[in-house]
Image 1 (cartoon, rainbow, N blue to C red):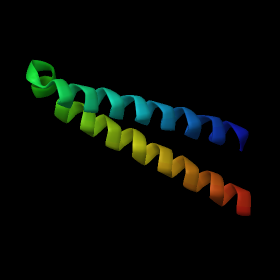
Image 2 (image 1 turned 90 degrees about the horizontal axis):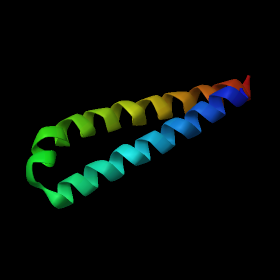
Image 3 (image 1 turned 135 degrees about the vertical axis):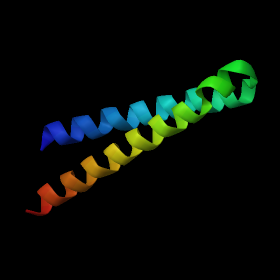
Image 4 (image 1 turned 60 degrees about the horizontal axis):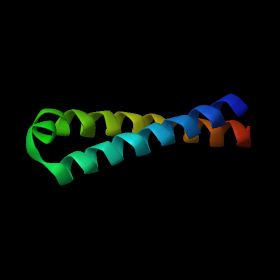
Length: 64
């Protein structure tokens, strides 16, 4: 159960990092945003979904 919590925390940090890079890229604009904007959004959604899934599993394990 502790491993799920650590993994969820790490994935939340990864999600935040991807989000910050994406926002910074959008603010700058240019070639970086054109090339990586959509990819960063997809990776953020995947990381965010994995974080939510792990938190759900953690809550499920805590009630069992």
